[in-house]
Image 1 (cartoon, rainbow, N blue to C red):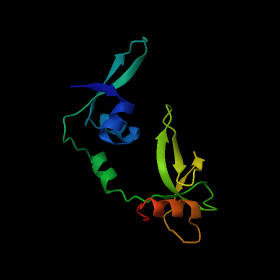
Image 2: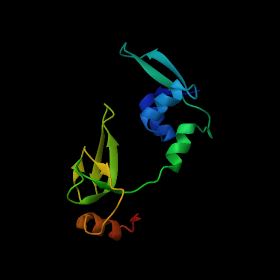
Image 3: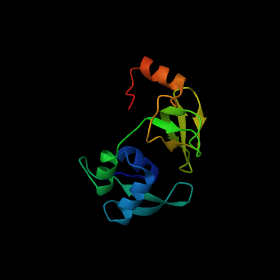
Image 4: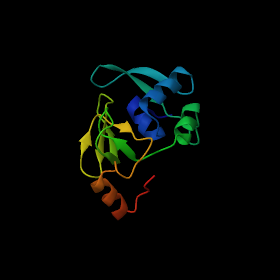
Length: 133
């Protein structure tokens, strides 16, 4: 079986790193401490066989998704359409919106109002034929 970092396991299994860690703690995934080429000890995860399913996966699959997010904690201004979510090496999540705005502070817009939608994001979403909800 292939052994990879927690971050790589997250990418392979399409789960957040926090869910990978939870699966390790719950015994759903095997993990080991291993010395790397630089002499540092880190955790590696044994990738499961194809078709593997966990409780964390079912939660993620059933989670409702909205592409519209606030760019600030106060939930003021426009609601933006997320184009890309990326993660830093420290597992901080950053977003890039369709209008070009980048933010490291974003909050799900549970209730949408046409008035609050970013006009640039809305135009881009329509031009790309992206789902609006």
